[in-house]
Image (cartoon, rainbow, N blue to C red; front, side):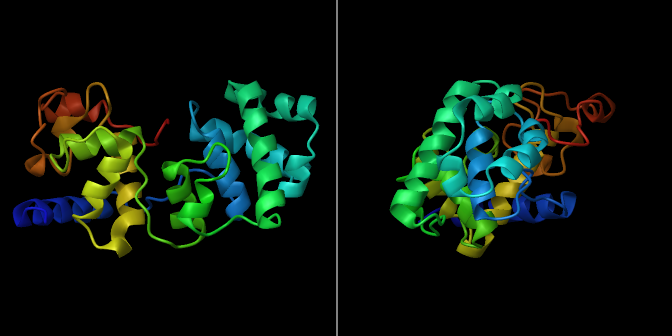
Length: 231
């Protein structure tokens, strides 16, 4: 069982972040579970903004798993070019479309144990899809989430699966998806990997890492705050 004081502190931090970022949500655009699955796979090693920019063209050409499975490789590579690693990402989408058609009749499954069997889909991607397309609570441990969970003293783990399980024990299941959004938004806007905006942080009083890596002066810290996430 987690420490009661840790649970209380963690939940207080989440409440304050919810007030700070009332619009927190998945920053990838999508219209259905298939689109969310694809754009989440594409978001690796690039920004959500770049993925959102190619999304309309991509799904106009390949709107469903069957179309994606039969996509023209050269055309798909051309669409994905701006994202970088476009050849690998083209392979991933072709295999993903084929797997959905062959194993799930062209439908995105709504269970974690099924999603993680798909090519290119790990627990992080699966939890994004479950939480945002199926309303099934899940914790998305991306680089931002893991960094903040450690800075806040919620876990010492570095393995994403272990982080997920330790943080899950601190919060009610119903809060998992929004907790993920709150931490990711905070990581993108204030609690940066380098030079976090400590002096402009709404949860500084509960953070053991306050001032360790970022400026505590409010004016200096305010310059580091981003209006929008870049990653």
